[in-house]
Image 1 (cartoon, rainbow, N blue to C red):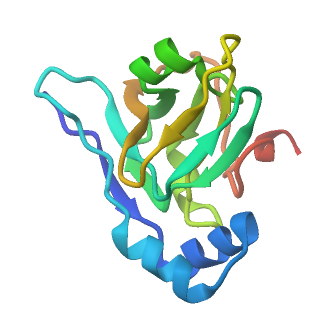
Image 2: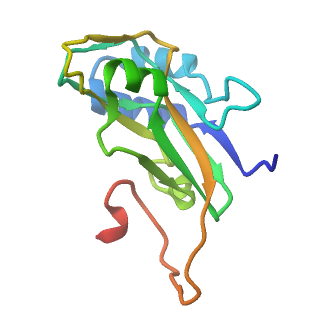
Length: 169
């Protein structure tokens, strides 16, 4: 299998700033969370998805949403994209969904001012009243690297700086 990417942590400074902006709390707490972050990895040799692990314990009631700063960034070949989905079992059992359905992490996001920090926003979309509790360190999303092509007349030279919506500003 060809190796096309590498996961890394964002800097401690970037993570702490993003964590405090999302959840508040103290810098010491955010630094403690940062130190415990696990890089995504595959569970088995045949797995396509790299599991993202929750940096915190949380409970979502039906209809509730949470935005998670993962502390992770992905360096990848220019002709690849990282697509992020909920873990299959959580989607099946709890209707856990990403708010944007599928997260698209472009290769040039790595170079953004926020160091390409991947955030994952989840909703417990249970229509059966099921509460979802995730423990710190538990897998909650999966990322799959896919190669893509461009059209023959594509001459784009612009560079990204930012996340969602930054390419249409």
